[in-house]
Length: 151
Image (tube, rainbow, N blue to C red; front, side, top):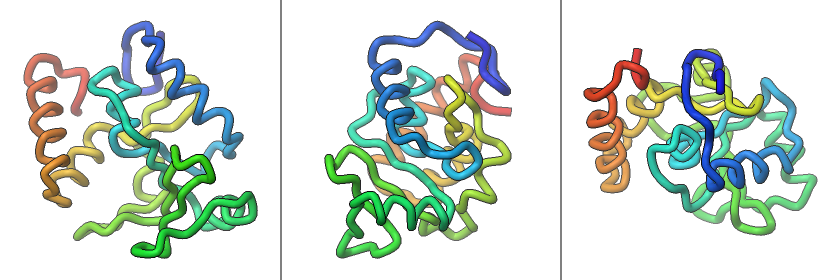
């Protein structure tokens, strides 16, 4: 399989389900990037529990019109009616994380933009949550074994 920015492998059934779920949303290219554990799952690094999506303001409002609900704690974050997807227009980090900053370095599987490992590593290092620390260790371990993962 050829991936923009990477040469990689044939994907698993779990990855196929991930791609199918994302494609079922019919989001316009250039208006979203898949983040978090789903981006790691796309690379076959680990499983995902939900699918986090960084979206444009236009797509954010489109999702509201399709029945996605705002989270009470974070009004700039939406949850899909089935609870599988979360969408936001920005992340709370010490540097800007928006569609404009992440999309240019995204990697593509099945025409779906996923956050690059470089950006994901920077975000997870900045957030410093326990789950992010584990992902940082995993990414660093894999990058030491192969220069495929980080530039």
